[in-house]
Image 1 (tube, rainbow, N blue to C red):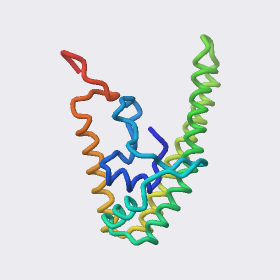
Image 2: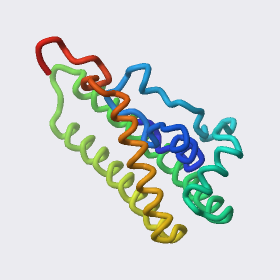
Image 3: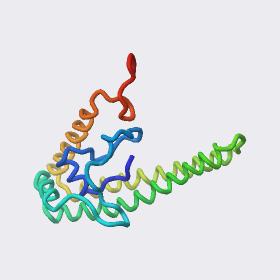
Amino acid sequence: MNIIPLVVSLFALINQGGDPFGPSPDDHSPQSKPKIHTVQLGGPQHGPSDEEKEKSRLRLGITVDQQNRIEALFKATGQQMHDLYTKLHEKRNELRTNVYGQYSFDNRQVKAAQSEILAINKQILEVQADTEVKLRKILNRQQFDRLQQMLKESFEKRRNERGARGPGGRPPRPGGP
């Protein structure tokens, strides 16, 4: 899965019917590529136009201040998540290469690597939960419900666009699943 999209991308994706959560981990089809530029952490800023952000803001019924607070929240969270996912990727690669890549390996190394990976996953879940709490302090119940409905519609649209495609965005095999 891609790094968690920042709210500016979320707004634009909802407007354009994209999937705010990115493609599924096993979806490598051309249709799985994001339809817009997302904010690149540590690089040039790309994203929706001011017009797209305003359209999304109005659709959600949030104020400019709320939008700014959400963008700041997701920018900070996005950097944390980027760092954690980078670390997670590195640890999984180390396990795959340095341990499982050898015919003989030490089970203690496996357990140590698994513990590190689990700790990073726990941190990711904690950041996500913390972000959800903070988001609910910015949005009122109606705005939150509208956001959830927009995300649901976006997800359904994306799923329907894939239609008869099988796992990983590939067409289903003839004669079976």
